[in-house]
Image 1 (tube, rainbow, N blue to C red):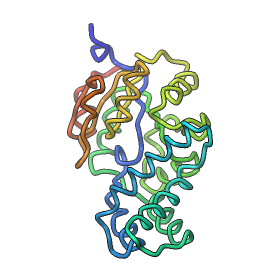
Image 2 (cartoon, one colour; image 1 turned 60 degrees about the vertical axis):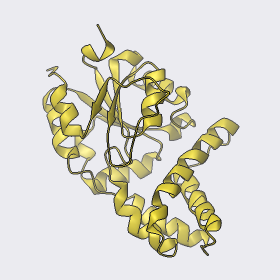
Image 3 (cartoon, rainbow, N blue to C red; image 1 turned 180 degrees about the vertical axis):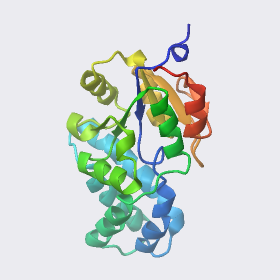
Image 4 (tube, rainbow, N blue to C red; image 1 turned 30 degrees about the vertical axis):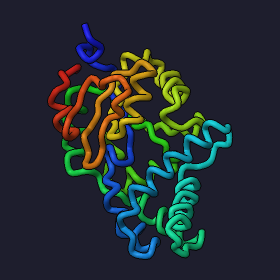
Length: 230
């Protein structure tokens, strides 16, 4: 029997890009970068890259702080004048107000109706994700929220997932990680979790990683694939 053939006890969701649509930040980040809206993906990937630098060096920094530093780096690379205060305003004002993808609320409701425990696990801070969920109308869909802020290790470091298993008092194979990032799916799979990859626009799997248990176009498709457990 494959891992995916056994329904998970808990479904764990990544937040940014998986549940929340980062595309709405394009205008705000673009404005800070002198109209270069095309630099949004570079900013986000630079932020992720340097979150792993802090993990590797043991110098944990808040995800928002890393985001500001990453935006300043992108601006400098592209010779765009940008003050730190401007960078912080551009990120915080937009990141905390991301809308949910159109399929998310319907998908979450189906999973709740089927009896699943739903939690989030994000690289964002505890206060950050609480505000994001409140503004996006997602608070009531989740049983709990978890942040690497408490583990002081960013995903996809295996220690981040192992910390989560302790919080949930669960064996890795009994949890399903849902993410739109190939790196998150790769990390969760290596940590022993069931995994589901949501094919958000522009997102692909890491070819050298283990294949996820599910590959779906949106959350509602995944919700309809999973059996009821109540």
